[in-house]
Picture 1: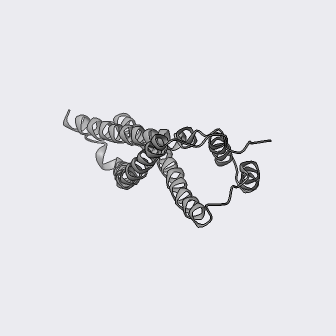
Picture 2 (picture 1 turned 90 degrees about the horizontal axis):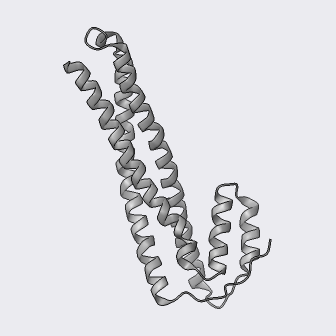
Length: 183
């Protein structure tokens, strides 16, 4: 596979937009990560409490209603795990970007062969990381700084939507359970 050296230098506006989006991505991902960790712990605890007290709850609520509530909590838990995976990717990209920036500042005269860099990185990575790195390096080679980091910006937004979905599903599961108890 052949990747050309960068043909265009990013404009000052592209560099600034990239910096703003990268900073926003980093901050929001970290905050969502902390929130979702506590949320997932609360969901798991609620699920375990439901299952552990099934016999005691049986006189007040049907097993079928408990199952429905538990399914909502399980779906929320599964979506939350996917969100944590995205958070891990974003954190890794942030750490990698900081390291790459530091290395680039050490030797500003060096012009690495993007194709060779891709080859070296691909040897040690597995999909989906390999695909993401390939996409980023191709965009960089084309001189499109924003497209190179576009995945990170989109992933942060997906992470936010997944966290919202987890929150709503968890609230629905608990709300359904409480409504069933009150009936």
